[in-house]
Image (cartoon, rainbow, N blue to C red; front, side, top):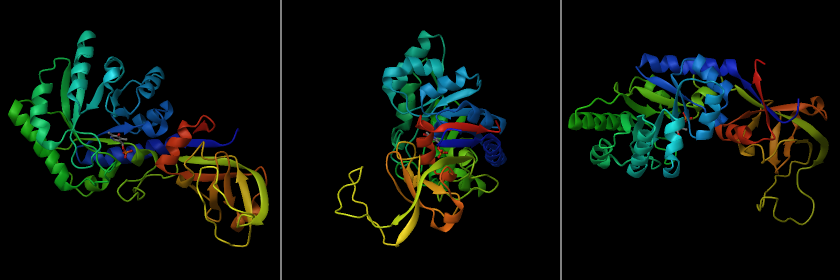
Length: 357
Ligand SMILES: *Cc1c(COP(=O)(O)O)cnc(C)c1O
């Protein structure tokens, strides 16, 4: 096996999906499984679908294309706002998209009409996280304009929290979303099918029973992939945190001082790193680096090993505690955060290996 590589345990992902789907189902919420953290890897999407998610959410059209050409037939949701320049591709590739701009909705409508279809949209409301979304007091006039576009159908309202402004979902902001939905329904006399309130940050609110009943849709990525809610990044009960493991090989193993020797300058990334003097340490150089992962986002599975730092193509670790047991050519393993997972999935130097094979 070529190193470094990332193992992807599909059974664990399936079981994580089932745990999340069953919890949400108990509270009347259906789950879209989000695969953007794994670049739309088709086997991962299939594992999520086996675990019971009812559709797949992606932020990239090319990932949706990959899923479809791998034969994954489900409803595909485009999570990132569609670019005005690509409305024709969006209506062709995605079944539903999240939106907040009238000009884009007009473009989607025209593109859908040209294809003789109606494109479904969820209108995103910004409840304070300050990423995408229409401000709450604009919703009613906004919906009035969207209803004049024959090529799009408003499937529901949605919101995204805990991403940019780190605003946590709460009974308050979720009730605000529901109140807006009711106002839209009463003003225009039609029913909104989906109130899409949550991502992985909403699991605690859902499990505590404080999620308002009308919220009936969630878009969940990290909790399924890595088994964590995202308010405190606590392991979620009944899920695995180790469906993804990064493996790298020891290239050099030597005892060296812990302080660099000689006059100091910038490192390879223009930084001035500081080091603690711990005497001589047994150091291993591994064949994974910043070109492959977010070095700050990985942690050795063997707790006796400590990461000292990384350059573009090396990771430097202190194997002190495990020194006797590590040899050149050995493989060391690391857990990954969402950011490190995304980087490893994106790097063409990291081989991906699905389990079971
Ligand atoms: C990424 C994303 C999600 C999934 O978020 P997780 O925290 O991974 O569950 C949901 N909705 C939108 C709009 C997203 O961009």
